[in-house]
Image (tube, rainbow, N blue to C red; front, top):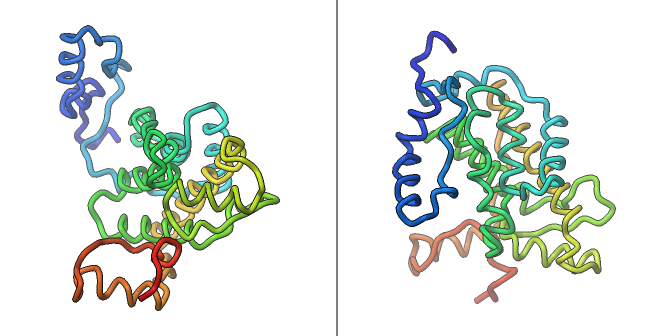
Length: 248
């Protein structure tokens, strides 16, 4: 890392707007909520960082950390992000994973994109940046999530057919007979599974063996071709249409 251009953690946070945010919060009496620019002396190399991902991740260790971090109350999004960046080591683990806490329960409880997917995708972006590799990995993870019975090692599994937290939880409630408020162990295991699957795809990209296999169903593709940039051109999205929309 010594041969790379580096900036201090303080400089990084200032360049990202941390100092400005702190001043703004201080002026409103909320300075205690400002991000800290501590850890003086820790240095962050100039981005992009793909060259620092030079050895495969321990997929099962990533899974274990995802479950552990969730059980510690960090939420699905932060836990998935932290599991991957912790496994990656420096410089990735110098980015505060707390910033991903917003994503829990589908973005502060709104039930939109599953937080585990959100956090895992952010970690992929941190490694691969604006690249086709990032897009391909994230696309594969989201598709895998939608089509796979999760959690992988749970007694009760469910297929979400959607990347939305709202739908995923509802499908699990129907399959398990439990209440949504009892979802903790299930979501913890799912967080570990998503982080691990993401690490697996990252390893395959590193080894040059990654081959995407996720594809739209013929029914969804027919809808997509018409409604997304086609004749109707009235929406956007790759999700399976059938769970929410009637055919026509």
